[in-house]
Image (cartoon, rainbow, N blue to C red; front, side):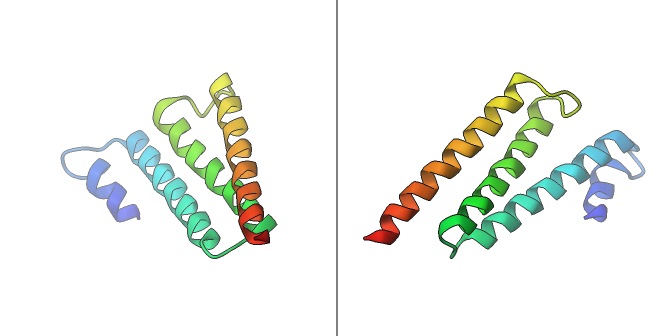
Length: 101
């Protein structure tokens, strides 16, 4: 992964450590989101609920880093937390209803 960051932001033409570090943290957040998603594919019940919250927070982290400031806690962070919990609860209830049939 460091080679990817070096390729884009630390080579002969460009030497920008801030952009390098930003790309590295975005790639880590993407890997974490994909890991949560891959772990939740065949799961049901409470485990899937917890993994969905992990997916939501990882995606919220990607959105926050791309469009907002990660150094401040703003209203957009509250909105992302509420949406993550709401979608996870809805998915849990839908999964539970389908499982009981």
